[in-house]
Length: 321
Image (cartoon, rainbow, N blue to C red; front, side, top):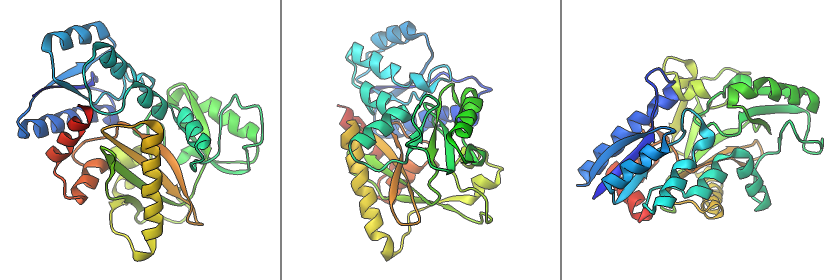
């Protein structure tokens, strides 16, 4: 089967998070070749007419969509699915609306809250009410950017009043892609649950090994991308749990399935959680386009379920078709 792998057209001097798109594309191409398919890669820029013409000429049976941003802008993640919908070409992963709503963290939190699913309180600069504010730790996040862009331990601030928190959001918004919000910081355990074609893969916990007392535990940019940093070495993924964790894991699986249905996801996805000191889970993010690099969490969860990466790719393609 002829398969076009679309990925962002990234500059050679881009950050590690953006350059990772090449690793994902190469990993996917290798796996698809091993399955007997005929994959070819197309880097995608803002020149959508060029992409349209290339796809019409190539006539792929399906597109494997790895585009996470265009021209470095995460808020354009839904553009490629929209173009593929217009062309009538089948493609992997979430469809346009699901990609847009799940990738905009504010829209995603609103949908979660409306469905009665647990998501931490949040505020934007424009919020006129103080009802959602309580003094304490808040974390300032980008509305659109993923891969922990702009996120590190200094993103967690102790705010005594809403005004101070609003000032911090204004100060940081340009470094966070131009739009940000504040979320009540859940200082607890962190979990990832991956889903493949609607099936839940083994949950993983991110362990903060050797973190000194007082150091904020957050999986930020350094933990994900800076290989020489303390955070990168000290944040370890684990699939091993005690018997006492079984009720919590069952709840995380249940919530992940509800997220899959609520957002109308397809192919593959990952739901990130924090669990507070009382054992209550909070949904941090619903990622409709999680990283597929060899060392990423999704392939690790699939391997834990005794699935090879080619197996994963074939299931994603089958779900697209």
